[in-house]
Image 1 (cartoon, one colour):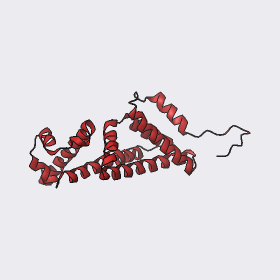
Image 2: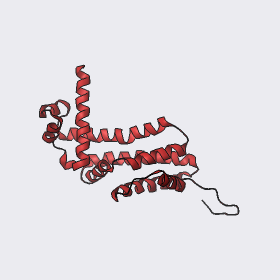
Image 3: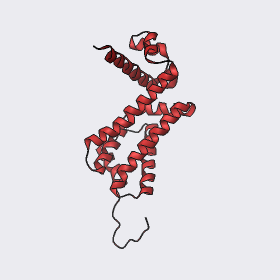
Image 4: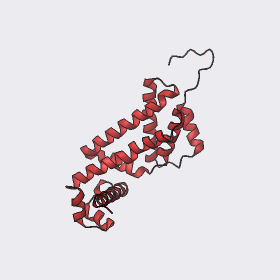
Length: 191
């Protein structure tokens, strides 16, 4: 294996291990020696890839952002379909995700400015993507923005409550709430 490729694989192992520790133990678990031992490498391996713990934490946040936001959006877009299909796919992926990492990063963001900035970027990107899927369904901009916040907040709350798995019937219910219905004849409500 080429040295550069080996370095990248080792760095990916450090990132995967760090995200796993973060999900299981929170930011307090991000300690160099225990992760090195888990990986079966020396502390020197860590310093080959990262200047210090703060540099590693920054890389972890970037990796989380990449894997759990950008890649999910790319996956949904690559799968294609109409906006409703994409929204259903996104909701399904979101409700099937392991929430421990997202919860750990939200807790970390309370006390760590770097985590807070990453969380703010992720929240912004996720909300913007939701709005981009709701608009073609017929929601005006302001209502799409409100529904995106509501859905995103509901997802966060659902994970906090540790709700049961969401299946096709629950997805149908969620999608029914997000799909505007035509007004019955004779109704003159303002939207």
